Amino acid sequence: MVLYGAIEAGGTKFVCAVASGPDDILSEVTIATKGPAETLKEVVGYFKDYQEKSGEQINAVGIGCFGPVDLRKESGTYGYITSTPKEGWQDTEVAGFFERELKVPVGFDTDVNAAAYGEYLWGAGTGLEVVIYLTVGTGIGGGLYVHGKPVHGLIHPEMGHVIVRQDKNKDPFEGCCPYHGGCLEGLASGRAVDLRWDCHAAELAEDHAAWELEADYLAQGLINYILTVSPERIILGGGLMHKKQLFPMIRKKVQEKLNGYILIPAIQEEIDNYIVSPGLGEKSGICGAIGLAAGALAE
Ligand code: ZN
Image (cartoon, rainbow, N blue to C red):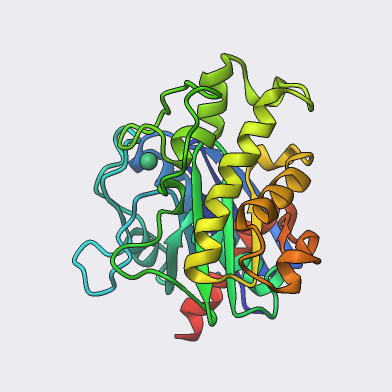
């Protein structure tokens, strides 16, 4: 049996799994993120323990990693976390560490690209050519798959930081992005919602004015993506999207704001099937990491 090690590396926790495929996760563990040396040692220890106890070898590892990360294969710091605000993690080698420690090929991408890949392979993006996965949590990030490949380019897309229109009469909040103030992330991330209403987003009632505003900003972001890369489906995940009432509000606002400009059934009639929840639920990221591992082994 071919076994994959999968890692969803986040700023607060590392979710690690051993699996033979997306439907066959044999072991899973969550490790709190501490300093880089300590955390990475603990993660590799988990895989080594698994191998020892089961007598089976892990054949490849896939990592979806918080960032920013270096994805340029020709770069001397490929597979590194680069200029992250996460204390102590700047310039940390991640992919190469697992390659050396476990002596296996390693697939490496951003956390959100990994989740997008999981959805593309086995979730709500299956069978489509151009898919966006947007996570709306503490921050906002997007992964874009085009013809089976994640878009990397100059670095990788940073869809959370697109600029949106703000009506300061309705919403005087200055925005919380340290770089742009009121970009999409600055106005619509979980952090922005918490700060604007001085209350944890999860505690706001379903009919709170926060959600109308939230749906408006997210719809603006989605329209930017629809008009620039023409995705066949947009998958919305992350903590804030657990507020299911947002989906119909976002869909309606996307239609209103496009204002009949894109005359296609996906937008006009079948938008419930166009802007959707993740098909893999909370497993998009870890399944994507399994996919990255399989890809690294096949290379
Ligand atoms: Zn920003």
